[in-house]
Each structure stands twice: as structure tokens, then as C-alpha cells.
Image (cartoon, rainbow, N blue to C red; front, side, top):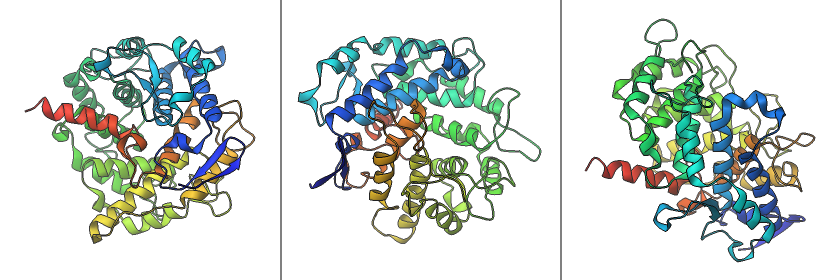
Amino acid sequence: VSVSVSVEGTKKASTSRCFVASCFSRERVEAHVRFMLSGLKQLSPGFASLDASRPWLLYWVVHGLSLLGFEYERGDTGGEKLVPAAWYPYHEEVSEQLRSALERAPNKRACLDFLGSCQNPSGGYGGGPQQLSHIATTYAAVAALVIVGGKGALEQVDKAATKEFFRKMQVRQGDQKGAFTVHNGGEVDMRACYLAMAVCRMLGLDTDFLDVEGMVEYIRRCQSYEGGFGGEPGNEAHGGYSYCAFAALSLVGKEDEVDLYQLLEWVSNRQQPIEGGFNGRTNKLVDSCYSFWQGSLVCLVSDCYNQKFGADSCEAFHSEALQDWVLLCCQLDDGGLRDKPGTNPDYYHTCYSLSGLSLCFRIGAPDEGKTDLLCNIRADKLSEVMTKAVQSFV
């Protein structure tokens, strides 16, 4: 496969390249890995505002690491450490500096124990130990459990209590009927619909305990005149909310309940012709996190059309242009990715930039080389969990 070097240490790969790590030189991969590993240690006081988002921090870090080819040893090896995956392109060239950083990283058991400490007896996970259960941090915790893996990783989840938590969070009457509050007494918006459905998928829960038809109707009312979805009925179409809306519908098999053509037209126009990246709303600046939110949305809608008309899968967006944006404008020499030039890198944008890059290689890539469009965890890790869930009912 021919690979052109666009800037020092960066490779712009064609879509026949299978892995995100193949976009980078070994030195760049290791810089990004060291940056993410810094999120697993004691953080500075500047992160105090994220104290209620600690499962999210863990998810952003371990998912980003897994896309670059670093994961916790599998349970059948008896190991607990972060190591390069067998398919990692530079497996034989890991530097001593990175080996040392991996040795100092928290082991698998520490991650699983931390997540367990965030679970509440009444169901769901909070943003930290003894914090209020929140649908968003419940998703982050369950996704992190799947990624970190290990024997019985999901066995810590009280599925019955989780179902009861979701049932209580769903609005049963009024204008918001079918939607979910994100926590007891919290706000209602589109995120919670998606997050609840994604957790149900990862845990293998049937959604018959919820008012799915009410949720679908609520989502339908959130589609704007532009074609995208707002956080609530009447709001402006937004990339994150649009992904959440359509992904939630896809998770319950109700994609046809909305105007697909208008949605496809709107999301297709979010990839900007000059920058190559996606913006979140009409006339807004490009942001690297929308590489996943909008990139995966256009893939989902395109796949839906392909299935309806029996067409083969094809590129749903301009892959090389998106690679140019992320690789040339959003990564830093010292590691980490940012939303746009002039800003600092962070774990959130690093995670979703890498997730967006993985979409460029989804056609023909093995499961370990791509992220799942509906749950945003590596496809092979999700498949393993879902296979176990099916086997448990046999």
C-alpha cells in the first residue's frame, strides 16, 4: 500500500490501510500514547471541574489507546498490564521510554475496581464514588468495562438495578414523554435517549421494559427543518444530538421513522470543502470531535440507504480530506489531539479524533481496526462481549 508522508512523522494513508496507528510514525504514536497515559494518573487541580466525569476520563483514554493498538492483557493470559496488541504496526520497536510509562500505568484490576466503586445500589454509575447515578457516566463506565475487558468485566454490573434506573429516568407523560432525564431531577435532552439504548446493547438488555415507541416519537419531533436533530424539539440541528438521535433509532430498528433524505443532505454538508473536517452546526467552525459524531452519522445514514436499495458499502465522506484535517491541523508534536489549531490538546478530542480517523478505514478493515458506529468501542471488543451475552442465554 502506498503511503505518502504529509508532514514529519505523519502518514496519510489510503482507506486500504487497516489501522489508525498506520497513519502515524512510531514516534508520533508513542507521543499520543504517553499523552493519554497521563490521564490515568493523579491529575492537576485544573481538572477539578471534571470530578463528576471520572468514568468519562477513563473511557476517553482507554478507547483512544485501544484504537492505537494498546490494550490490557486478555484474561486468558493471566496478565493485568497495558501492552501493545499483536497487530500494533510497531510491535517490535516499542521504545524503553514508552515501556516504562506502560509499566507505571494502573493495571486492569485498578480500573475495574474504580468503576465498581462508582456503581450505586439503586442502579447506574455516578461520576465518581458516592456520586449521583447519571445516564452519561453509566454509558462511560460500561463502555470502559468492555474496553478494559478481563474475565467477568461486565459481571460487576447490576443489570436489574440498571434497568430500574433507566425505567425511572424515562419521562412517562407530558410534552417530553418518551425522553429520559440524565439523572434524578436532571435535564432532558437527546443524549440520554442514545446513551440508555447503547448501554442496553452492550449489556444485552431487551428494551421491552421501556416505552420505546414514546422515545421514537420524541426523537422524531426533534428533527429540525434542516434535517438534523436538536437536543429538544424546536432546537437548532446539532452534530452531537443528531448522532445521538439517529444512533438511538438504529439501536431499536426504527431508522425509517424520520426524514432520511433531509438528514443525509444536512450531515453531508457538514464536511467543509476547505478544511476537510466536519463542523457541528451550519456556519460554525470545524472541530475534530465531529470527525466521529458527524462522520459516523453519515456512515450510519449511508448504510441505511445502501441496505434499502441493495447497494454495496462505499465511502460516505471524503476520507483523505478528513485525514488531512486531523493529521495536519489537530495533532501536536508532544502528543495529544485538539479541536482546532490554536487550542490545547485534551483527552476528549484525542479520543474522538482517533475514533473519526478509524472511520476512514472501516470498509474492509478487521474488527480490531475499526470502531463500532453505534457504541464507539472497538468492534472486536464489542463482538466478544455480545457473543458472551448470547452464550449466557443458551
